[in-house]
Length: 457
Ligand SMILES: C[S@@+](CC[C@H](N)C(=O)[O-])C[C@H]1O[C@@H](n2cnc3c(N)ncnc32)[C@H](O)[C@@H]1O
Ligand code: SF4
View (cartoon, rainbow, N blue to C red):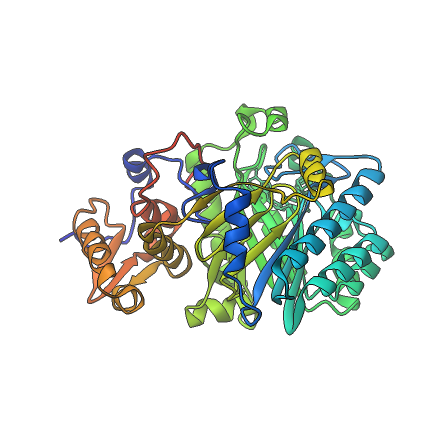
């Protein structure tokens, strides 16, 4: 039995299990997808859909009018608008082809536009997308429609587009308000500009706003991050996402523009994350999962309290849909039986769609073992705990080896990260920032791939 601890030696834990672990927005994670699972699997997985089952839809917009040096998203900078207009045409075609192949309009429970910067898409193109989606899907009356926006794009026309789409939530990138940090990441964005955009969004009737903040950025001192957090709190968004900057210049070449010597070290990152988290909680936000905060009345906070929080490729969500259909270059679809990702290069994606072919390129078919592990990892990332009785109720006798595995891991946990109370395997409050590490104990694929992941904290 491990002695009770209120503090955790993070350095020892990261040395033991490795500092780089997946963010677990899926299990297995995208680096384990293979070319062998592509178009045929996509068509077969789609056949499992029924008209009554609500699905979640994701549209990827891989364009921005500027490129931030820190960005890890699949996007590219374009100064001209015509490539965006042509890409919207491809999305419209892909959505219509999906509807034709399926033979019925599935119920749409949630829609998310991400990128890149969907706010770069002009109102008439947003209208085209909206019409294509409404022709292909049966929108639920309470469908949540969310869009990621870059405040520097937002004009009255953008607001008209958001209204046409009947958007219910927007997610705004802030990262850090300090000018020195902004110069180091090539993202000038004043507090006043952000405040005015939020005021306009609120005036246009938007019910919920999320702000993204990053720690671990170049030249980001504790004082600069604290000042950013204070300003974000003053804007009173319903949600905040506090992400650790993932520096992966081997994957994202433009991140080489960031000087490694300007980056805070692991201890500073840890302290920054803890302080920012404390400040958001002190300002009345409830901590959600590993990196989100929400006001008490927000859907995400309600889902977290009810134990119904989910985690998908967009991160934490209150959306209960089991199926996610992704449209656009690099978009991932998620089905009960597996994952399928569209081809990543934008030109190739558009070529496939123009030729009338599915854009699916690679994926993964879940084995029965994966299904149980995916569920366990999702619950650990959402609830910081596994209800072992609920696991048995869900998977029957097939759950037994996993229950034994959880109990064995808890008994051999030298750092006191977890505890078992009756039939509850729980991550200790002091170890919550290491939830990804604990989740990785249940990852049967982690040792098998050459994948590289971001820092655990
Ligand atoms: C698609 S962007 C947000 C929308 C819009 N393009 C913007 O920048 O305002 C999604 C979010 O991902 C996060 N992000 C991007 N690159 C990241 C990285 N390398 N590490 C951690 N988070 C990152 C940022 O917080 C960013 O706001
Ligand atoms: S952070 Fe947003 S605006 Fe900046 S490059 Fe990435 S997607 Fe584009």
